[in-house]
Length: 120
Image (cartoon, rainbow, N blue to C red; front, side, top):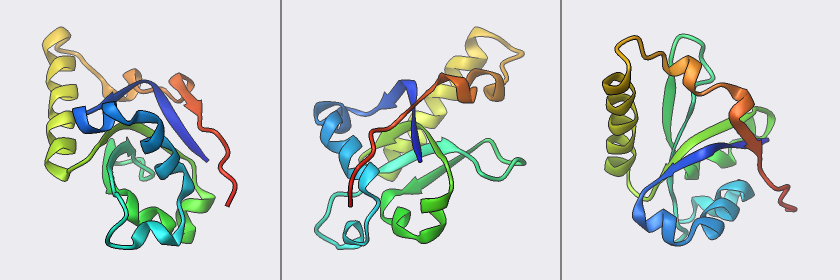
């Protein structure tokens, strides 16, 4: 299941079409892999406990593995560079506010809302 962060980070192209973007990401179908379909880059909590976050292209979400795992999305960007910049901004703001900033404490799973179930 896909869970969305309460205060989702987005870049301008995504913010303009937020609902359409969410629906596209939640579909997770093979058709998203086609070259003419819109792909997004998501910043999500890492499935590996040793890592903090992952940046992933949504075209990879049609793999069966992602159908069985929970995905906690923190931010969405139209381009990879935008996702990296968004991640840099999140971390910089956190450390600027508090030197003892711990991202694991900021992005607790309780602060995520489940996505709408999309029928295939």
